[in-house]
Length: 398
Image (cartoon, rainbow, N blue to C red; front, side):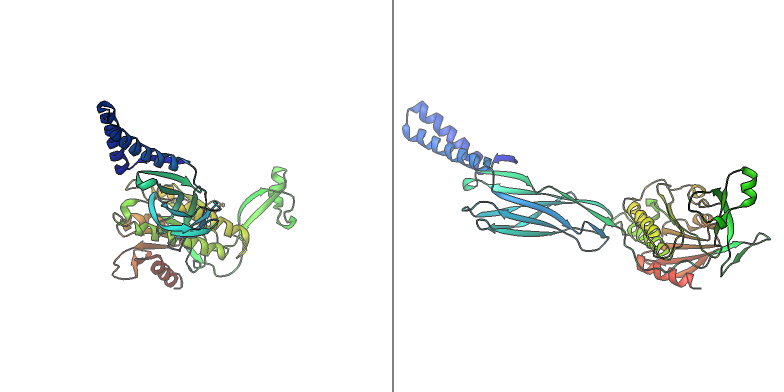
């Protein structure tokens, strides 16, 4: 569809000149001026009519890949095809990427010829990046008029957090008989809940005492006390990061959170990811390492983290954000708080009071040291997600 059909400054000047010559020629009964005016107006009219005719151009717009990690290369491909069997075309225009119009180099197409233009798509920010449509720019006769046409539709690139290598959390802990917490290195099962029997359950897991009491077959749910339960708390307050100019600090923090969730899912470790403002709360349940369900849950968490943006109040409820995960008596064995260097760390330490192990992963553009301590918590500092995850590996290996 032709849009923006209009005369240029040259076409407007020629139109004014033609009208003036035509009027003066008619008033003065001077055929030469009348002919000049008609010729000038005819040229402008021919330019407008030529642009009003459809262009024999087929445009196909696609983005490859459609989903990519942050900072990975991605591009939009604009495929052009001249549908005319005899008319050559010179194609010029712009492609819209993330709300910006990027001019494309002109491409000359022979009759029935094809061509393709590649447009890089920025991936330095997570989110859904709209790409397209391609806008064809046309010039009429003697550049007296111009037109713009939208061609080829549009696409969306999903930029997800980076998933970097990270170690699994340290072994879990359980409550001792005297109220302390003791490390459990191997085996054992703890009763964490009861539920009604469903077809397919192992009959050896029936809890006979409860079955006799309620009159309905009840199955025990057991948890391995040596299995860690990781909670990743992402500080999504804008005030915690020095992102006035670039916004890279929060992007690195999201990469850390997504990588920890992925690492746990790969090892079959139950993990929960929450934001400080409470706008996100997702879980990847325990399962067989490398099995489908935990990895699907981790991919879902990455999708949810794709659209998380910094914001919210300066002070958020830590008690509301860090609650005991579902599952009866399960505790938060390991708490990883991912935040920025402007966040008040003493306040964040309150989040780890119910966890056996607490680590603060701080995005700091200029850290004085990588590993440190604040109270009972280990503090890891670094400017990039790779630095923080290396510090995480060192901390959990202790």
